[in-house]
Image 1 (cartoon, rainbow, N blue to C red):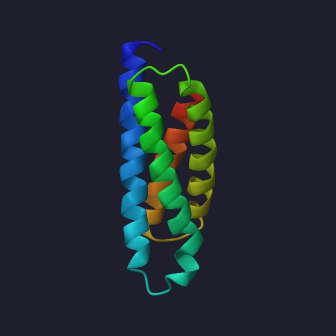
Image 2: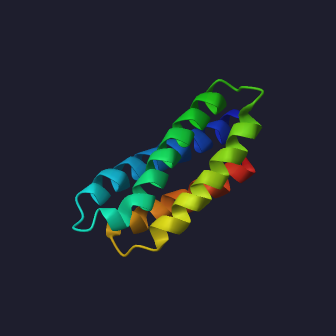
Length: 107
């Protein structure tokens, strides 16, 4: 993977992790937190895998491809769940997850 591609992927991974963390915290402030449970859980999973993938990619690990494949799957699941909710934080997170899924697939 070339350096420019690495930097772009690292940036997208970091943005997605931040969006997921923000969404999870924002979901906790919603009136019906129970309804947001799946969203919160996927937000936390997605943020965690994005941070892990960022670590693998930044050190050019030989296992990066495997981690990126898993990251893409988690981003897809999180993005699909967030897209179901009308809240701005969920919609922003869904978009970040879509970008990250695509970047992981290309990375």
